[in-house]
Image 1 (tube, rainbow, N blue to C red):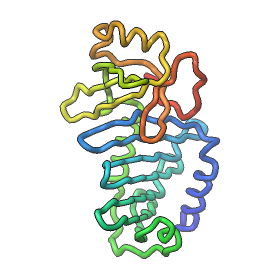
Image 2: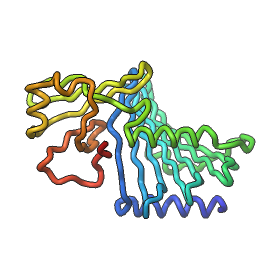
Image 3: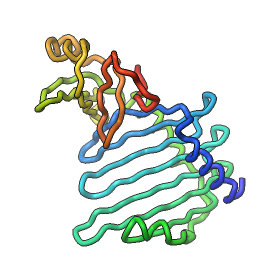
Image 4: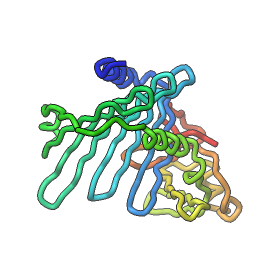
Length: 232
């Protein structure tokens, strides 16, 4: 695929993303960083992964990985940096053919509006293997499937004002934790609140939706959209 073909392919995925099967992970935390991922599929094949990363008060980052026939063809990244005096926006694109990054380009601006009007400039980097990107996709698959460093179990449930929060911990020392906001209770949440010891250190089975960087619990009786998380 040429550079033009790759961009057209990615644009078509973006334009039709609402019609694709979508699975979204929990919102995970490791240190001061929050992250979650979405996997988009068509006819059972993954064609796009999106990773959202937030360092509160410092930066927000979005990476999009586009695949064709299970091969990575494009990675788009957008970063907004919050500074004391100014805000900086960057966008970059890495084009991949036969598992080799053959072109990288980026653009920079101090406002998001200016960023969209700026032209991309070529980054003078030699062609290299896309091993790092491939490893990132494996990591995002783990996040969506809640496995390995993203496998979390019940720790506690606390009530704050008019909502509760399910606290999920990882059994691995370097694993991610997660919090799920509960705004509407059902019988399952009632059980978590009344007898939390029964669920301690167990993997829970429930549905959620991600809204404004928060995983929000979906009650059993509620209708569930395609944006809900994968249940295990």
